[in-house]
Image 1 (cartoon, rainbow, N blue to C red):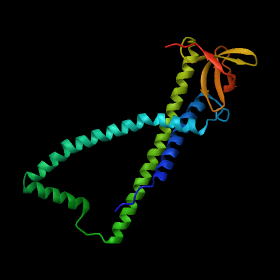
Image 2: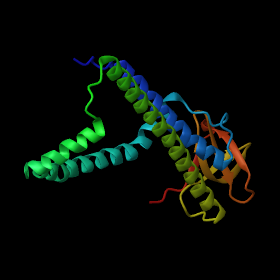
Image 3: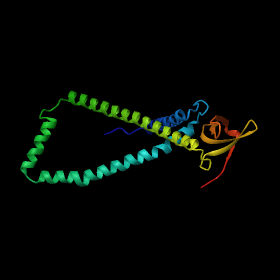
Image 4: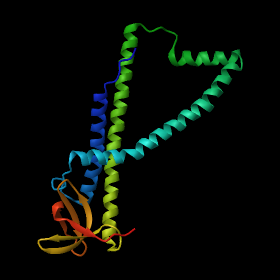
Length: 211
């Protein structure tokens, strides 16, 4: 009988994964936009929520892919295999020969089965770690692409597009393209001078609403 999974462990692992994905995405954005990570520090809730939103697409894609693969296997591949085995004695012999070639005839002792099980667990953990590293690279690249899109709109001087804000800094109104916000500070790049300004959220900013 399998031991029940501790919900606290599942919650801790899920939180760590969401935190890592969100941090990787935001780091890619900040690095490409050349923003100071210390000035753009986010709260824990911001990081977790951002990671949750980012995870929707990949998780849905993985679930849909798994469902499609399982459907093809259960409704096409496996029925064909069953029909082939039932087709005659010759087919059954071929299946038995293939199994013996792949698995072998010998009966492994308990200690050997235990070591093989340990190797399988290590292999699964290694694969999961590799997938996690690949996911971090993916989300960091995604954040970098988002920053390039924002900077691309800035370089085209398209002031009618979304993201143009007006901020009062030192009693001077600045027209900037919004870049990002952290827990306390926001950042924008001035339309004409290409100068990046950091300003506290408490100072506020305005923008022109457009659909």
